[in-house]
Image (cartoon, rainbow, N blue to C red; front, side, top):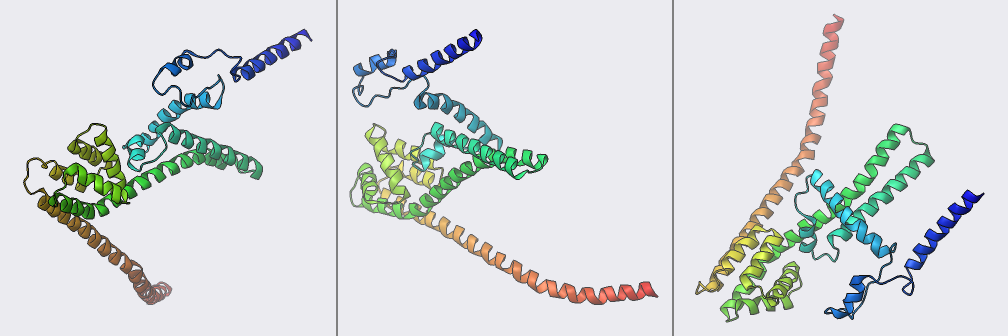
Length: 302
């Protein structure tokens, strides 16, 4: 009886400690919380977390989920880092938040598939296969979604780039500087290039030069046409007629887009003939097979 009282007392003590640790008047503030009011911006919103609060658990799980998710992604051939893809598509999620969401979906799918296998009475071999495959599929599904979104954003930049280049060339020919021209395109545009140009202008306000900001955008977007355009814009202070150079580059980008369109149309036209060929050859094979089988039967019977 005394042992059970000791165990109950220890459990009560641990529970009260966890409960009171969430109360501000009970727990002792950490050094970071005591120093925060004396730092720039420290009088704003202050995040207070107890020893077992949601924030503290997230801070512990986030780095672990990020490391584990990066290793699994590299294992399945994803070479580009998640931070670059999230920044490319202007995602509000951080790397840790996205990886934590992936781990959460994987754990939820594991629990759902496990309960379903127990309720439905699935054979053990299939149950193990489903239980092991469900978390991995949930993880890879979110990874595939972010990859598809990144490729769609790159495609939008490639398709919008000729128009944006021509507009920038017209602005430079009209007397605008490179910085003011980029700012005008960023404020008046609404596409993918305009969104990226707003980030470029933000980097310029932070002290980065126009050329360095454009090169940073080209590396982040990972589009060959944008790299060539950034190389042309790097001649801003050396070339006397930069507007014509940008216009020629825009025509080159448009020709690349037209070649890709023609290749896609030809590929689809070739794919159309596949069912037609199959539908044509199948009756002919049947008509040839009937007398062939009859001849074989005749020779075998004789």
